Length: 201
Image 1 (cartoon, rainbow, N blue to C red):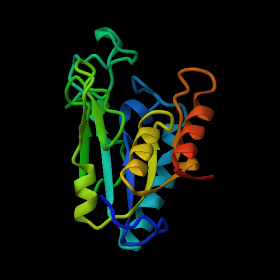
Image 2 (cartoon, rainbow, N blue to C red):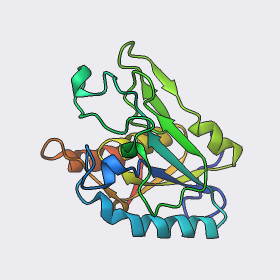
Image 3 (cartoon, rainbow, N blue to C red):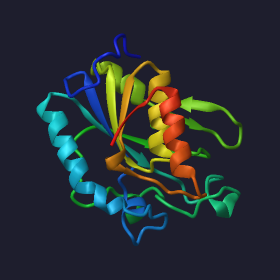
């Protein structure tokens, strides 16, 4: 957990979290394609380069589901089968430079939304991932969070980050939204702002 979250700009204490830039989300042929997801890659690559130039770490989250999980509609959830571990759909999109730690999430009977925590859908218990400790080891106090999707994994990661004491910034130009229901984008942006997440255009 950070001791000083007052430095949100690019610096060695500011990490970039690249959320779920995977085939099933960011490719039009993916099973849970987020419209416009493929357009994010050039901007995220530039963000990675800028973070590294400033001496900050880059970390990645990756949806990594079993074939059967209560997260999927076939097993009682709401989502089509996606990002099944070891399949092409779970792979990062081509052209994304993955040179840093990867936090895999949703590998059990979990939702796998936040990079910091997962909810066990069978027991209702929340479990932490290793992301917070990875950031603590790198003396990180602030996060820039990009990737997919803005109304689920990006939102959950950003809100959790603020709750843990990080300064969290979400550049809206570097995310896209599922919008499972009309108004989900606006509701997600409002929820992040109310939680203390800084939003950039």
